[in-house]
Length: 144
Image (tube, rainbow, N blue to C red; front, side, top):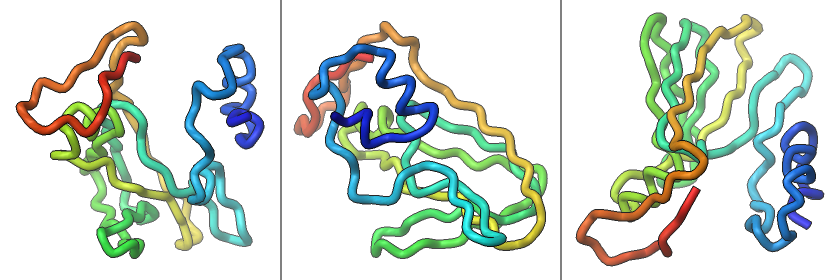
């Protein structure tokens, strides 16, 4: 079952939904979005944000990395007092891939503690979403 492959709070949450095992996609071959703790490196594994947008207020400790089109990790430049806007999977789907949800991760090798505040902008649970763009439909209609 998909939720058995997950660990921690996310795995517990999925077990408690009593959803059928085939409701969720197969595990990704990419590293889990769990916490990374190796020596003095602390962060969050590679993932995309599932919802609409994530707004991240950041300090000057750089730790955000984004995967580019070649599959290489690019270090983001942290500028104190600025915001990072991440497009989520739902926006990618609603726009038929016009906008892309970038794979990103947090890897802090600075030895300093970063402070960042994410705000997740997502639809209500019962909202039905549909693609209104006049493009070839890549995705089947989705409901949240």
